[in-house]
Structure formats: C-alpha cells, structure tokens
Picture 1 (cartoon, rainbow, N blue to C red):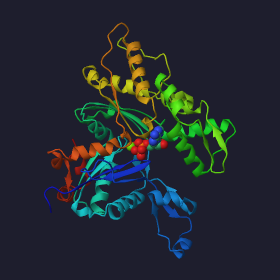
Picture 2 (picture 1 turned 90 degrees about the horizontal axis):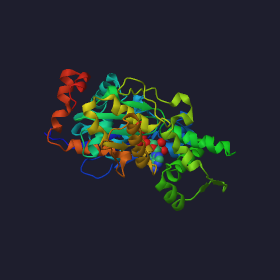
Picture 3 (picture 1 turned 120 degrees about the vertical axis):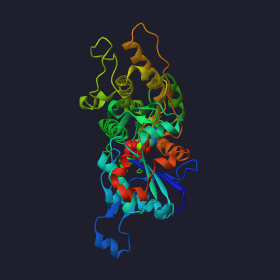
Length: 396
Ligand SMILES: Nc1ncnc2c1ncn2[C@@H]1O[C@H](COP(=O)(O)OP(=O)(O)OP(=O)(O)O)[C@@H](O)[C@H]1O
Ligand SMILES: [Mg+2]
C-alpha cells in the first residue's frame, strides 16, 4: 500500500455532486445528485434498461423513473442511493479502484455524529477505501479563499447556513440557518408567475423556471439595476412557443433572500441579537441573509468579531445572483452602524470567487495538498482497530 495514496475529493451537495482530483482546477464530475428507479421493474428489465439510472441520465429518463435525491438539506438520507451515486462516480466516471484512494468528503454542518460514522463505514465496508477525511463544507469553502478564520455564507438548494470559523474550527453553536435558499426561490418565482396567470406544474416546467431564476434574476442594487436590465433578455419562451415577459419578477424573486418575510413569517429566523445594553436589537430593515450573517458574527466572542467581519466569504450556487456581494456588504455595514451608534465602523469585507458553487470542493483539494493532511485521514487499519467512531478523533 502506497504511503501517500492518490486523492479524490467529493462534495455531496443536495443539488449537485462534484468529484475530482486535487491536481485539476475544477471537479471532473459534476452531476445532479439524483437516482432514478424504473416505475415498472419488469417492463424495464424486459426492455434491457439498467436497474437504476443516476445523475443526468436519471433526469433525462425521469418520464419512466421514480427520481429521488439521496441528500436532503445537505444530509444523506438514503444510503443505498448514495452508494449508487458513489459507485457511479468511482467506477463509471473516474474509473478508479477505491482501495488505493484516499477520499476527502465534504459534509454539511447539519450532519449528526451517526451520519459521520455511517459515511466512514460505507466508504470502508462497501467500497473498501484506502482512507478518508471528512470535512465540513463550510470550513473547506473558507480554505478555498486561502483563509482559516472567517464567516462562510453558504446558500445552496434547501438551506442557507452562516458559519463562523476560527482557525479552521467551525463554531457550530454560533451558526445561523434558514430554509430560504435555491429551492424556495424557484418556488417563489413560480408563484409570482402563477399570479400573472402562467402555470408551471410539471417537473420540466419547474426546471425551466429554475433556469430563468439562475440566468435572468438579479439582486436590486444601484449597479445591477442598470447593467443586468440592459444586458439580459426580459422574458423567456416556453417549449410551445409562448413568450413570457418578466417584469419586476427578476428582482422580486431573489429579493426573498434578503427579506425572508416575503415568503411568510415562518421563514424569518428566530436568532436574536442583543445590544451591549442587553436589550433585543431590532434592525430598521427586513431580516434576510444579511441578518443571518450579522447575527452569526454577533453570537461570537467580541475579540473574534473584527477578524470575522473582515473575512465574510460567499459559497453555494444561490449566492451567484448578480449583486449579492454588494447588497450583503451594504446591509451588514448598516446593521453594524445601527447597533453601534456613534462608533467607528470596523473593516467589513465580503469576498467572492467566480466558481463559488464548488468552493467546498476546491477547499478540499487545497487541504489535501498540505503536509499534515495525511495525519488527518482515517486509514483502513485505524478503522479496523477502532471502528467508525474513529472519525470523530481524526478531525482538525
Ligand atoms: N447562477 C445562479 N444564480 C442563482 N442561483 C443559482 C445559480 N446557479 C445555481 N443556482 C442555484 O443554486 C442552488 C444549488 O446550489 P449548490 O450547487 O451550492 O447546492 P449543493 O451544494 O448541491 O447543495 P447544498 O444545499 O446541500 O449545499 C440551486 O437552487 C440552483 O438553482
Ligand atoms: Mg453545497
């Protein structure tokens, strides 16, 4: 067995699975995290179809498949389907022998200890992996920015999480979360269009709306209002040729990311922020992703806050709307001023990278290249000696 095995980095997103090698600039495999089983097994077998389809093939054939996502809100819920996805990645896509590879797996902050153990157990028992490192996607995303201390604002498919990280340790107790993320925004756009008389009920129509959200929507800021409105079309055409004009929808849809109450009061997070005098701080504007960020920083010890304010980083596909950075920065500064009346404003910076939908994957690659990485992994021998709970001891 090689002393330094080759490495594969996998980020099991709820929407997209990304996998590849640290020596390459982007993930080699980027596929929808879905598995499809034929509705009628007998007919499928007779027609020579495979028992399961995964990723893009499952999406393409969903007409006669039951398609489901094994990862929900960042947490693996269906282990059999997860194994099918991993098998596909290892044996069909990357064509590797897992027994000679070390796997860096990105995991959600919502994962329980049992999930961590099950991840290790599955890789060791079902795939006979050489070794494994399990890292929080929040911390890995921060590494992608070359930082070990900062606040990671990650908005993906079903969950937005804001995680303060200190010297590589995620401060889980101070994290803030909301279910306002990509899926909720797609539903919101669909509802806005329905109110205008356009119905989108089938899965493919919903995907169309999702594409409209990704390509035509933007966050209202002085800059985006002029550029986005001028450079992108103001409507889209349905497969049947019907043209649907977009009006205020382009900004009204992602606005919910900065004002959760648009989706209903139940979406407004309950996290509290106490002013220095001890009373509840209530901002003058609507609570959204900026509030989550401000509350997460404020939850941390005062001495830590300056380093966090100056290193707010964005991750996840739902932070890709044009204007997110500027709006978030402006609102966090505003929240700071409202809470610290008469004081100077700390250095507040929001950092972005173009490929932030796979920042966790990139961070996993960067971590795997540092000298101490091999001491952080769980080897097969350690797994066999201590069992799945060894995963809790082998972490940064
Ligand atoms: N350019 C874009 N603008 C706005 N939203 C986008 C864009 N590209 C992708 N998204 C949205 O991002 C969401 C997926 O985000 P992401 O890929 O970060 O999720 P994930 O990592 O697979 O899942 P998880 O939520 O578990 O982290 C989807 O709702 C998708 O529609
Ligand atoms: Mg993700």
